[in-house]
Amino acid sequence: MKSERRKIKTPKSINREIVKHFLMLAVILVLLVESVFLIITSSSANSTAREQLMRIGRDVASLTDGHNDSALLRYMRNCREDGFAVYIVAPDGKVILPLEEAEEVGFSNEIEDIKSRLIKAGRGGSVIYTANDNLNYVASVNFYGEKILVASYSLLITRNTMRRLIIYFTIVGVIAITLCGLISYVVSQKLSGGLKNLSSCAERFSKGDFNVDFANSEYLELAVLSDTLNSVRDEVKKSGDFQRELLANVSHDLKTPLTMIKAYASMIREISGNNPEKRDKHLQVIIDEADRLTGLVNDVLNVSKVNSTLNQINPKVFNLTEFVYGIINKFEYLQETQGYSFMVDIDANLYTRADEEKISQVIYNLLGNAVNYTGEEKTVYISLKKDLAGDRITLKIRDTGKGISKEDLPEIWNRYYRVNETHSRPVKGTGLGLNIVKIILQNHKFDFGVDSELGKGSTFWVDFPEVPAEIQ
Ligand code: ADP
Image 1 (cartoon, protein in one colour):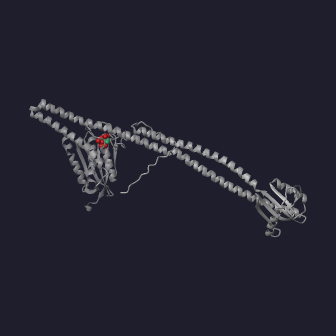
Image 2 (cartoon, rainbow, N blue to C red; image 1 turned 90 degrees about the vertical axis):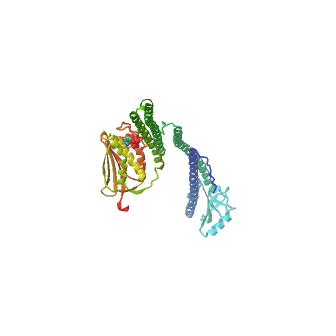
Image 3 (tube, protein in one colour; image 1 turned 90 degrees about the horizontal axis):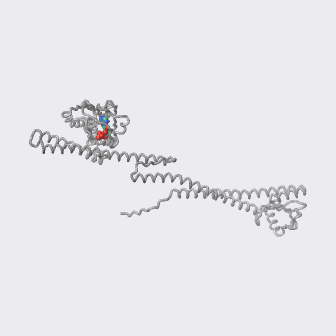
């Protein structure tokens, strides 16, 4: 046998999990948005600077070709205001324009490098390249002879802007993450608040408090759970009440015959012992009451037996006509002793497929109820008829009793349910009979039901599948 190792995980707090995942999501989103934004910004700043340098190159070339010196100087100053340094440089690296900068700025160190780049670019060409944190543009221009245009843009400007952007983004990111944390905390508190409430109610319920209210939550899923728990509570409460009532009924019903037996036994000892006629009469009462007691105990035993085997069905084909007659015959003693009559209308030779023992329980219960609850004329009508389509047999058991009210109709099939009324015969029911009928017929998947009208009586019916006789 393989040895199974079960990992016991410590349960996680929903609150903490929600906040943790929200925060993770917020951090990922902030980082993603920031990096995409920074990449796009820095690459677009670089390409804008390149385009600007190339435009400056074209403008300066046209100004030098036109010998428009003052316009050229103005243009160079404007460029400087936009962050672009523009120089006209002599072949030896000295600055020719703007003159005022000739003292401070010189390109004698770089001039050879610049020239060799220009030679590589070919005649009339221009080059853009990066050197010493600058984006440089160099081109040959005609300014009173062949000169070189050097325009440069400091990349430090872009870097500073980026650095500032990163700081802003970090601040905005921290604020966004904090807000996200706060919102997720509030949401998680709200959600888990509903759950905590339900679990504390469930705890009270488990300790036997049936008045607990699984209060409805504002969230749909929790509201559904509350409703389910409320109906579980009602069912448990009902079942408890019914069981208590059943216990009271059964003990009451046991008490009456016991009292009678004791009373008549004492009477025989003290009064009728020597009078054979009286003694026999009193003994008969004792026998009858003992029979009643046996019947009652049998009922209770049957109930528990039926309950434990209710779900097992052993179907077989049998003659339903004879089967129903057989059960009616067992009720014959009521006809002789108490004046009951059974009016039958039963088709011959009808076969069905079902669990005989369970179906006998169904018919016994329905007939027993019809006898118990029928009216003054003490008549029960039983019909067993094949339907016109020929695939079903309907059993109907009708009484002419008080009937069942509309409110009670759906309830009578529930376990331990008894309508509070007095009946024609002292009813020793347990409220389990129709519940057993329901479970058996549902397991067979047979249709069944009851039609009843107050004051007129009830008709309980069951549809059996018909099996053709030749299959026998
Ligand atoms: P019981 O053992 O009390 O008869 P059942 O489950 O057989 O329990 O029936 C449940 C309740 O349904 C009965 O208490 C009775 O009030 C009602 N009932 C059942 N059959 C009839 C009927 N034929 N006529 C009127 N009421 C009925």
